[in-house]
Image 1 (cartoon, rainbow, N blue to C red):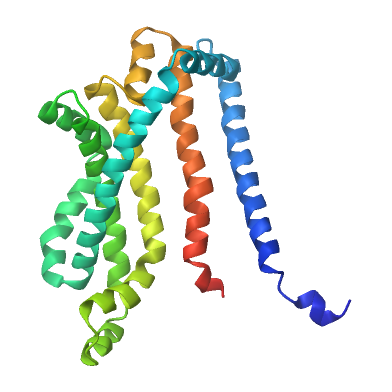
Image 2: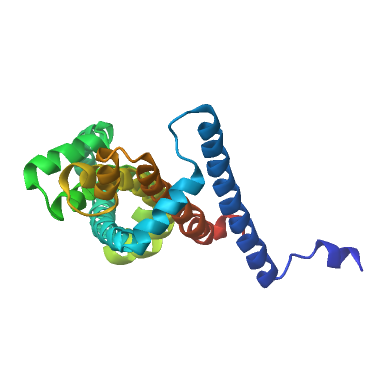
Length: 265
């Protein structure tokens, strides 16, 4: 085998397979870490149920139809609120990044929204909308929106102003400037915005369903908490954590690498 062959880049299929193996290893490592820390807490504590007890509770919940039913309800609420936060946040962030007036008008408000924890949004929406689907959806929206706005606005400000001015001086329409100049520049930050928004909004969803819903993952967690059945409570907490880990490692991570692959080209 020649030196040129040794230094040649790996085929695309091999790099893809290597990336998939890395993602699988990351998921396995994360799961083992969670289970190891949990088992250690079981040994140290005296009232913490074991992972086996939590899994048994999940099996029981699935057998009576509560697991998938409440999980589907929560996911529908979460996706609806997150989609609204991404659409509104992206538009507002780009506007703030391109317009000094918009930046002055909304930057302080967005900074204040970033400082408000998800539990406050959950309590406020419960008092505003009562028990129903609107409370968790609006909580997800309000919890995730500031993170989308701040990341998109920051990335838009980083777009070279000379490049935008040159495109405009050559008569390039604003829509094409946004599509071909601004959008590629903020693509990487968009994934970061989605990651932060998902974490905050998912916590907001759990709290909103805990305080102001009669269905969903948060409500079912509170059901077992009020019943003083820690195995059932920990079972739903496990579902909550695993969904975050899987979404981050299997969806957001590969998506970010794909969007920003031009940086290493």
